[in-house]
Every structure is written in structure tokens, then in C-alpha cells.
Length: 338
Image (tube, rainbow, N blue to C red):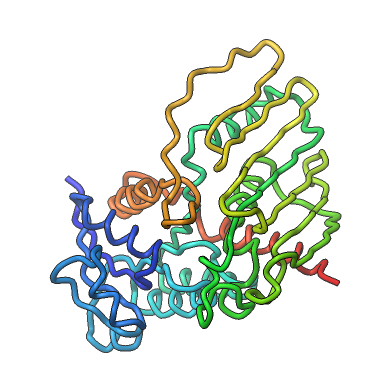
């Protein structure tokens, strides 16, 4: 039998509520605390009955509560400080993307985790998507031959319904940039499947969000893969009204394919030498935030990995070094800003 794992959740926004709900539904998990600066979260319909509320990490720590795991789902700019506080309190951490705003923050997290012998589980839930797992398999096994070209297209909508005045979204300090908040999962998939990049060239523009965000809403990125092949990442949050597409087209010397749909949720094309496309499992629907849709609702796989890892059955699926590498790639892309 698995031992029961105690959890606290920092940040009770869209993602934090999802963490809390999944923990509450898991037979081997127990939610013991919720931490959020806004006391009104206790009135939300999804706030779990009877769970203690704390207005800050400091008040939570002062209460002397010792939890096995702290799930950090606060604004991006607080990820590092909240994670460090949890690690120093001898808790493991489930850390939402991005791991940090910059590589230096990630390095501090890794150093502190090693100091206190704690695990950091970086949330990269799109790795569990059946089309993505299939892509990882066919590329790793060399079925498409050498990689010639990879094109990633992310065309989403984020408008004034999302960027509320006075909120953290859209600020350089707490949000970081469009690649940090909207598209880091796709940078992670690219890195997970095809490896690191070099020779980065980038163009950025803020087309429709000049009044609401402090960074770009659109980017055109070109680069080389260190293992061979060209790559490009084209992204925007300026699409009108709703998300249009998240896709990855891969050309190899022995075949090609495209994963597409709004959320890379289906294989749209596959033509590979001496290969028959298998029937894939259905993709989970995207996270639903009212007028907005996010990446696939796969967080339950992350929590299951935490339980099994802490019970000695599995290992961390996405470790802190991988989380740092994604932030490192994003940071190097943003260094191309003129």
C-alpha cells in the first residue's frame, strides 16, 4: 500500500484550484493547507471545505505545519521564492511552469533541493499527451531518419478578458513574457524530443496588447538543433476571440508528420517509410478557464507521479534540470530582443 502524502497548495487561481481538486480526489493524497494572498478565495465554490487558509508563505511556515509536498501555483515571479521556502521547510515541491523567470533562479532552486535532499517535480503535463508521447517514440527510435526541419506554430488568443488591470499577468516582473506563461510547454516538448538549440535568431512585436502587457505578443524564432536540423517557433496571442492552433510539423529524411489541432491533440499527417500509424489513445481535453483554453488537462498524471516517486515506485518524470533547461532556452531567445 502507498503511504498517504500530505500536500499544501500555494496559489488558488485557475491552476492552483486544479491542483487542490486532484489532490482531494486522490486516495493516497491529503490536502492540509491552501496559501493565497486573497482571502476571498475561501468563498470560491471549489475551495475545499475544512482546509486551513493562510495569507502568505510566512504565516503558513509560522504555523509549524510540516507537509510532504508543497504545490507552487503562484504567479511566475514568485515561483522561485515560494519553492525555496518550501524546500527549506523540508518539503518536496511540485512546481508549475515556468520553473523560474531566469536560469539563475532555477539554479538556486536546484542547489537548495540538493542541500535539503528534496525532490522538485516540474509540471510539464503535455508530455503525457498521446500524440506527444508517440512523437517522442518515433523520433527517438529513428523512424523518420535524420531530422531536417521542425516547425512549431502556436496561435492563441489572450485579450482583455485575460489581462485584467492591476493583475500580475502581462508584467515583466511577475509574468516574464509570452513564452514563459503561454508557450513554455511547447518549448519543453521541443527540447524533450529534439534536444537543445543554438544560433538563435528572433523577431518580436507587440501588435494588439500595447495597453495591457509589458512584452511581446508575437514572435518569429529560427534556430539550429545541436543534434542536427533547422527549427522555427512562430507564436502569437493576438488571434481574435479564441485559440486557433498549436502544431508541430516534423520533416525527416525517412518520413514526416504533423501534430496539430488547437492543442497539439491529434496527428494530422503521418507518412513514414515502412511504418503503419498505430491507433492512439484519446487526448484529454484542454484546461478550461471560461473564455480561454489552456494545455491538456493532464495534471492528474503529475500528482500520480509524485505519489509513486515518494513511495519508491517511480522516478521523477520531469526533474529540475529539465525544468531549468526550458527556462534557459527561453532566456536565450529573449536575449535576442533589440
